[in-house]
Amino acid sequence: MVLPADVVAEKQIRIATIMVQNNPFGMAVKEGTDFAGKVLADRNVKVDWISVPDFDAKKFEEAIDNAITAQYDAITLFGVSEALQPAVDRAVNEGLLVYTFNTEPGDNSKRQAYWGQDGYAGGQKIGQALVDQLNGEGEYAIITGSFAVLGHELRRQGARSIFDQNPNMKLVGEFENQDKGEEAYNIVQNLLTSNPNLKGIYVTAGGPFGAAKALKDAGKAPGEIKLVAHDWLDETIAYVREGYITAVLDQDPFNQGYAPVVAAFNKLAAGIDPEQEINWIEGDIATPENVNEKVPQ
Image (cartoon, rainbow, N blue to C red; front, side, top):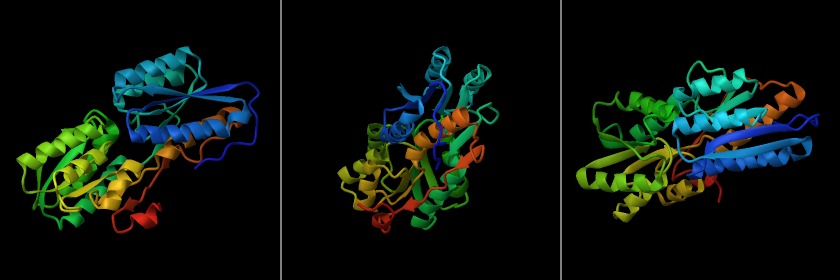
């Protein structure tokens, strides 16, 4: 999404990326950040990955404050929620360039640019896929990463705006899995026991492969229960090919890790601003029917 300016920084530029690394999505973002570091290696740039254990805004805040103390030139980070806005504003006030990805740190932060999908629209898009697959009727459940993470909430609310228009769709419950596949597995096991008529599941964030494994281990046939989710990760796409995940929306985690870092270098080394303040990633849907075309093996 971004090409590096053809310049070498006069003095070393230090860029920190702050992100969780406890799930495959975080690892995919890290691949993008690491690649940006390689691309910029001959331009007098040092790119550091700062791993946060989970999506606790307080832990992200501590990482931001540490980056300020360490006098980084720029920070790129997962915005988590509006609880992070004071820390982001502190960093900008201290002279750091702050670019965010995936989730905004509130609606009014001083961050200078953003890369990611419109969470509400993404939830609507994949939510409509579930409605279509269920023909607008049946019991369904939602598994979200965390009700405290703004991006997860936007997806959940976007999907609910679609589901709630269909009076024959019945929500049996909404659950948190903290982006963990094993938690999604346990939730689905319990759902199958307590809701024998369950027809659909929407996983808003990490761990949909855990939900798919629970369906498979329970002896459900591929597609018997419709399961829709996000991210074309290897673990997820494998279950799309098998038919247990029936629709998955991509959001390009590689570019979420890569683009803000390279854009930060361009701004600091060459004075080049991003093309837009908000850089949307639209994303496409893969299904068992088109997955080999969308994601060739």
